[in-house]
Length: 150
Image (cartoon, rainbow, N blue to C red; front, side, top):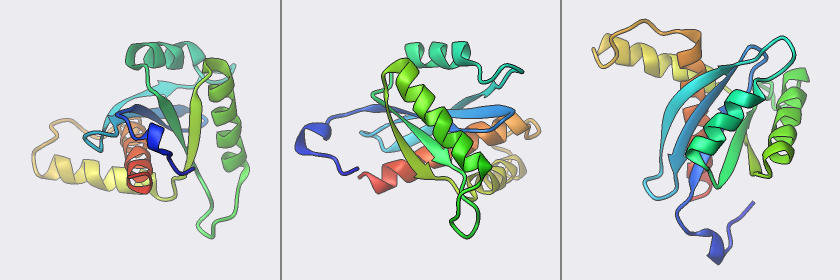
């Protein structure tokens, strides 16, 4: 959705890489146009960990949220795409937060490549865990949103 003149102020944005086991989370702002991976929230047996997500939202107080949509390689939707849309809808409804959707194809592969490169160059000391990949993928999703909206 294009921004109007009143929307060009600085905003904190939180991004989510939706998954059935974990949801990667990243945060960034429209002034620096950068994103930072935060963590991954584990999804429990009864669904997503709304308490943990709520705590992150209270701590960071973003102006809006971005949720990645996992399309198939050919651009078609899958069951996972529909689940991500449902997550985004629940996020918006539960927290009265504006939520935008971003195509997240290959974000996890890009995140893994970035993390492996950081480890090989010595910038990252510990092994790459799945939660790290999810948070880094959320960061990539947010970077894509920033690029599309700048």
